[in-house]
View 1 (cartoon, rainbow, N blue to C red):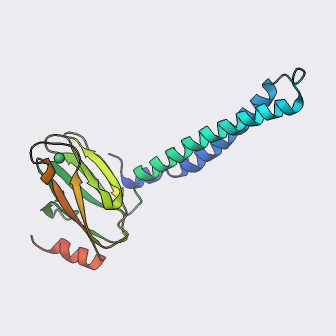
View 2: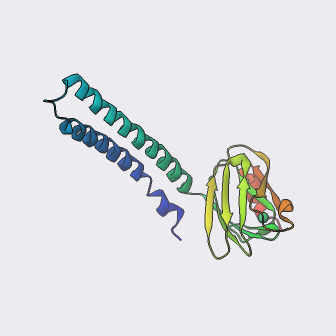
Length: 192
Ligand SMILES: [Cu+2]
């Protein structure tokens, strides 16, 4: 799997896509105007048709651009993210930290650092949902997925499995604690 750093290099493409969209709008406008037979149409009607064409093209491309750039933001993990491995299983979450500390159903993260969660499943399909940070991703056996979020508020939040995975599904919940960095470091070194 490519690293967070490699993925981050996709960011300049947003600018490239913006420029391409502008060029496409311009081209569409020029083609639109050149296709109109000015001899048969009043010039103002011709300009109106051309501008409507340009506007529709611009709206469609803007919608695409907004959707695409939002998607890229969701998928590009900022550099320096703390990587935490999460293994979903019937019916709990195994969390493995960068120092190999392993714990069940509890994610502890420092405030103000991007967090990347690498996710997979040990059995059936599960889905990790952290409503407080608006992220949700499926966990599939034999497949590695990921999601990232930025914990910008301290506190205790819930996370849940949101893919029906069997009789204990509704109990497949955990606690996410966002703490000051010093507390996180101390917690990481604690024996469970
Ligand atoms: Cu589940």
